[in-house]
Image 1: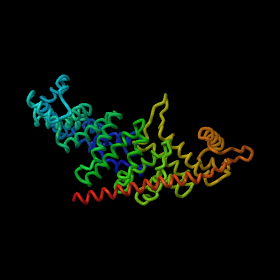
Image 2 (image 1 turned 135 degrees about the vertical axis):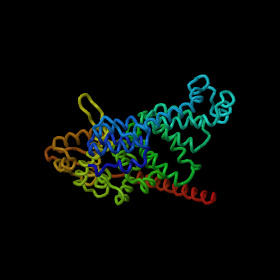
Image 3 (image 1 turned 90 degrees about the vertical axis):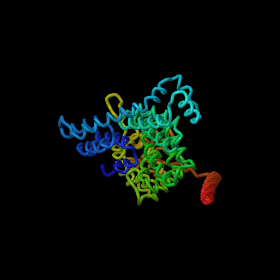
Image 4 (image 1 turned 30 degrees about the vertical axis):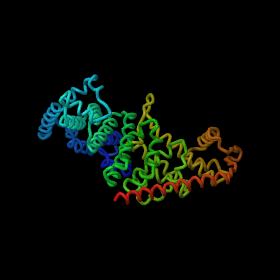
Amino acid sequence: MASYDLTPRIAPNLDRHLVFPLLEFLQERHLYEDEQILKSKIELLNRTNMVDYAMDIHKNLYHAEDVPQDMVERRVEVVARLKALEEAAAPLVAFLQNPSAVQELRADKLYNLQMLNERYQIGTEQIEALYQYAKFQFECGNYSGAADYLYQYRALCTNNERSLSALWGKLAAEILMQNWDIALEELNRLKEIIDSKSFSSPMNQVQSRIWLMHWSLFIFFNHDNGRTQIIDLFNQDKYLNTIQTSAPHLLRYLATAFIVNKRRRPQFKDFIKVIQQEQHSYKDPITEFLACVYVNYDFDGAKKKMRECEEVILNDPFLGKRVEEGNFSTVPLRDEFLENARLFIFETYCRIHQCIDMGVLAEKLNLNYEEAERWIVNLIRSSKLDAKIDSQSGTVIMEPNYPNVYEQLIDHTKALSGRTYKLVSQLLEQTQAQVAR
């Protein structure tokens, strides 16, 4: 299943610290040789200040007690640099550790700078030192301290670019500490800045959207409401266009979110068109499953892809999260995916056929006869499906449900007005951009 591993595509769009959880997952799943994973970890660590961790991995990899001299020298440099930065930021850190003094800070950053300078002799040099100290703490793996200092730094920083950099660092730190609620807040804050018209340049804006979507995967597949929010973000025109042009592999995660999301969305039909359009640039068992069911009506192919989808989910760092239940461990998303995938096959198959042989249907759903019968009975009860089972003939009989012409007309009118609104908005943006030039 290594051929379906997206880590080589995802890693270049992450902070190197965010790659470690992916490598840890791949090592647990034995998707690659341990030696290969350990070498990748050391290569990553050599570009950070987590020297002690790098030494431990080196000893584990080469089964040796001693480490290379350059690692020892690197550790001495890191400790010395950390001490120097700590001393430079000490005046401001001492101020921030005083609750009564921090209460004097206001939303007006210029007032804060003037107050700090007049009362505590803290100027721009100390504020810059706090940023460097926080960044160094992050590189050393002290994510909690880095998050706190970056938060305080943003309250004082007047440089927009540096403040944006601090926000990225804060987001990464919260993700690595698995503070999903706070991370989601930082993600939304970052999205507002990226989508603002005052962003530095269109090219940087697109690249920032790519980074944002990749970083958001950690949050959306761990947060309680993440599977809905990933659709809200990735399915927006600006972000979906970015996916299609620069990061089509993200379609795997949007497709999964659509499948496991129990609230059926009207955007799903449009997304199927995107899957169909992008088959030449990206496809995997999950996107191919949707194409089999909704484009090609290939139910035998869909059944085969369901088995492959299960393996893809189990070996994906974002989708294959395990939960311990007593003495067993399970992958909740896999179970939800397979349940809803069967439902997709059943619904589509029933639209085509009015009388369905239970044995044939069981084969399409990848279940035995008894399991299929129980599954369909439960589905009819829970979803109020217009169908009944004829036990004597062993068939499922679908009741005809003709669509209301007036409802169809209203739906098409709504879709038409929505497209018109989008076209007008795009024309206005292009006109404003030409006037600005």
